[in-house]
Length: 508
Image (cartoon, rainbow, N blue to C red; front, side, top):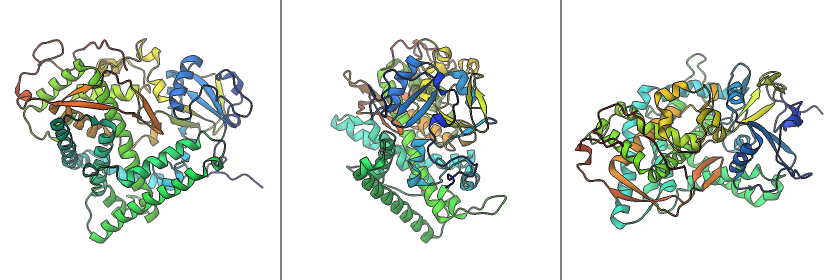
């Protein structure tokens, strides 16, 4: 019987590297490879990304790993990654980890195969929802959710309690995308335990990760049953949300309203009910999971680098002054705060890799032949540490790497926290505006105290998150924003915020 193929004529399902790399033996792999099992010695099922970073440092800018009968090629060298960013020769590949989410979101924006028409339909219908006009409309709702977070943190200050940073950032970003995108309130800050939607979402992501590390799903049948229950929970939550909106009969001008009411501008086609459900789940999951991680890592680094935090506060005080509620345009003026966010995303991009496949037979970097459909994982977290681009101190946290002059001097395609090309994250401007706004608000209101015994541990579940991060907070004095802002060098802040501030402490 003929093998099933995709609309592009390529085989469906996972394609091991042997099928697409004719000179695979030239690509290095870890030592002590075992028959049948592959490169499992010293590997951790819970931290495959961090294992890959370790191997990358030893094996170089292109390497491979084998897990049971699956061979993966990883690329992280800047020249090779730039080659794979060429849209004429390469396209998005829905890799194994992402394909494992298709039972959850089907052909949603994140998981659709390139040949599936619903991706383009949904992208064209929803793209105006991330325009500048739409973003300005979301801004007041972002402020309202941030106020709920700060009320929650103010209570922690009064009681002397440390705050759970990843947990609270997850609540914040879930409520933000739920309200701005779908007019819904999960009541996250009023709950003592995570909302069932969050529990189900974490369950599906964890299960998708586990599928990458077992030879057959039959070995995790109990987990598979839980995963089916989690998917049913996600579906029922979204179905209730859509039903409530349909019953109200009113459009809110948000993402859900666009999904239900907007036809494609050229074809007149509308999203089917099933497609609406898949896109809503995609946005609820992707729209909060990655942003919460980015904010959590940024707060970790701010707590460990008080000189950076003080410089950022000086910028917030100068740009926002005593304004109680900063306007939409004032957020983009926090250029140093944005650099902190970018540097946190450099060290720990919360989506730590993306896959690319060859559109036709080609040669990667002029040295590695690839057949049509051959694919590799671009290891973003290592690309962002390439010493040839970022210097010998690439592991060090330094927001001034994103000084405008430094950015101009760097080669293209060396900073990719949101993927690349036509299939890059559609909501990246939403995420960056939200995260910059929240960091500005928190810097203006609090001093961050870290536990000196804490060492950064990173949880992996397709996205990355700092594990067990707790901070102790201290409220700034009410008149702090009215003082003349002082730079890190001790001078009154009046010069542009991109004066270089050396950061001496190594990243933790």
